[in-house]
Amino acid sequence: MANIVITTHWTDGDVLPFIKIGSELRKRGHRVTLITHCYYKNMAKSQGLDFEAWDSPEQHRQMLEDMKEELDPLRNPCALERYKKKYESIEVRLREFKKVIAHCNTTDTVLVAKNRSSVAAYLAAEKLNIPLVCVFMAPSEMLSMVSYEMMLGKLLANELNLLRKELNLAPVKSWLAWQSSPKRQIALWPDWFAEPIEEWPAEVINVGFPLSYNERFDNLPPDLMEDLLGDEPPVVITGGTSKTIRPEFYPLCVETCRLSGRKGILVTRYEELLPKELPDKVKWFRELPLNKIFPYTSAVIHHGGMGTLSGAIAAGVPQLVLPYYLDRPYNALCLKKLGIAEYLPPIKWKPEIMVDALQKITASSFRERCKLFSKKVSLQNTMNEICCLIEETVNNEEFLLKDISLLQTT
Image (tube, rainbow, N blue to C red; front, side, top):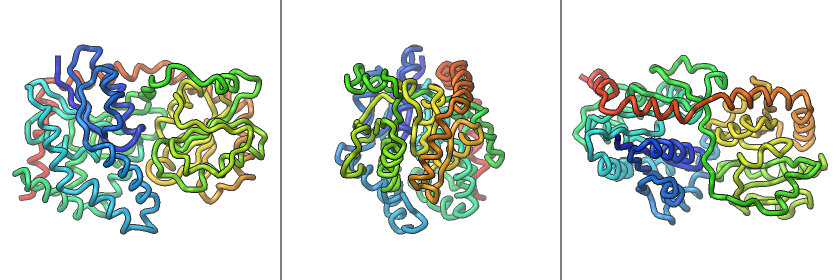
């Protein structure tokens, strides 16, 4: 069996799918190591995965705080630059490279890496001549990288080449060509969710949604069970597991529930993001297994993250999406085109508009359409397909980064 080394960064939506993938690969007899933030160590270990942390608990806590700096890069480009220097510098990438190669110690090693941020895995695959599988979490990731190349391509290539020089690797001409060089690229959404990204210069295989791993909660609180099984299904409100949401997100969602007279289940780890007082019909929980409770709810109001939206699609639950920044607006647009969500950009984040949107998506006809896509998700066999695609690369020269020379400067 193979030695699978998985690398990823950032928050639950970027990590939990890889824990699920790693768990399935482990069941198939492979040795699997996950390299990511220390927060996920116990979760990975519980699934039989070996684990290496990028950071310490304090460094991870600070990273989550610093992620807020990314919230408005157009208004605050200096803050974004500080963030990049702190978490994506040459020094950081070299430390990560050393951690990755320490686990690439057998000839049957395969690297599985989140796109763009897993620079160390790309370099290790190239340096050690190891197959690399690139994984995309959301459709807009490809679009954003094409945009980066158009606007900042020369700068990005120069930064990359400084890093490559430290590893005695030849310079490349194009950052995008290097980022798109893996021979096996996987997209974690079904082909019906979004139009193909024609600008992306490589083949990408759609495998479906990797419905989130979340088995940290065996029992739900009794008062929550009472609400879920009652005559009035509640509305779930969540802005994901990072702080990269606008400060008015939770207060407006709570006010929408209050004005509409609906029960609300608000899920966030960050109490400081909440309004000072909650209505009697809205209850706050730091964490919940959302995929377990979605089937018992009337709607989900959320930020547009792929993990949240895929769980809601699988449950057949209508969605009201309030996206801002990152992949979220594009995700919301995809949902709206499918007719299973309403999408409100920040300019429309007003209680009266949100109440009307919530009323619209909770109509029976809207929910029936959501059920059609729930059936589509139930037919997918995502984990098996991902595992087969990864296994196909083991000891297979076809998936080595052997054409990097074509990208090099002369």
